[in-house]
Image (cartoon, rainbow, N blue to C red; front, side, top):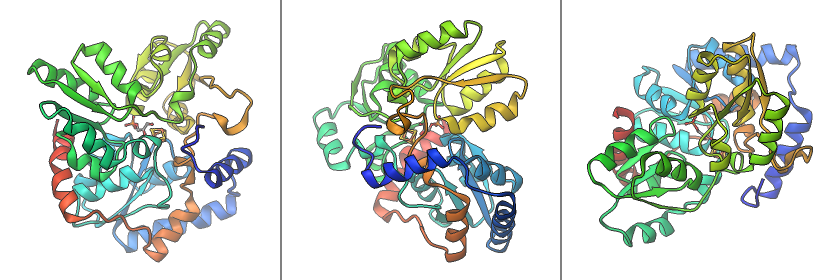
Length: 341
Ligand code: 13P
Ligand code: SF4
């Protein structure tokens, strides 16, 4: 992981990876029952990303919540009748839920969980960047702060980024794209749109390497390759399917391979195996093969979500997400475009 991940978090992350899962069946059942009761009492619902702890994903399914990619998480918050949204993922996902549903209470198991793309695109610097190109349409990835979303014309996730840029390009629009340079490059290559790019990347996907992946494909020539487009272009070029987390899961079901090499956060393996128990899934190699958490295909911030802090948040009703009204009103415009595209 590069140096945007603070040291104390890196240590915690390393410990998580080394210990893998820490629940025994007794405390697991106690925690799950307690969270189920708290959700019922408070009319709450769980909204969780595919990268979080498998036990949180399972509990979310058992309580009729939503386990999904970042786009569906945003839509589900708008559709549910629950008063309380408990978002397990990273900060931008909680903020998106709050902006789209200001009347609801939004909690997160931890407020420490952010994203290197969000950190890599500070609002003030981004404003100066945009001011240099006033004629361009500002398209930002959902992995950004509320303030950056408030400056954008469009917010997109990787599920719709390609289609939105294609749509804007067909109207003759020129684009400012931020913050993920790899996703931006991929979209530019596919659409030939006129794009000016911000320079940031995801600490997890940036670590997937072309040479390592080619070697692994040699070992498993019959395996299909699934890649999230936050990965470098040369890795994307080796893929049999490229897409958002939900598009990767769909491709694993539809494509006619019995084995897959997967270049995205390994939290997704719970869904991949659940959907296709007869298929085999391998983690794509990263820069730090065997180097513990320098790169381990696991997002250090997603890994901060646990059943323990989820329960504590619900008991204490803490870690509330709040977004200033002015930012909410501005960001609602670009986010509503995203959910209704
Ligand atoms: P998805 O929208 O594909 O779920 O991606 C979110 C994310 O943070 C990937 O790293
Ligand atoms: Fe951000 Fe990458 Fe983590 Fe996704 S995996 S939340 S893009 S740091």
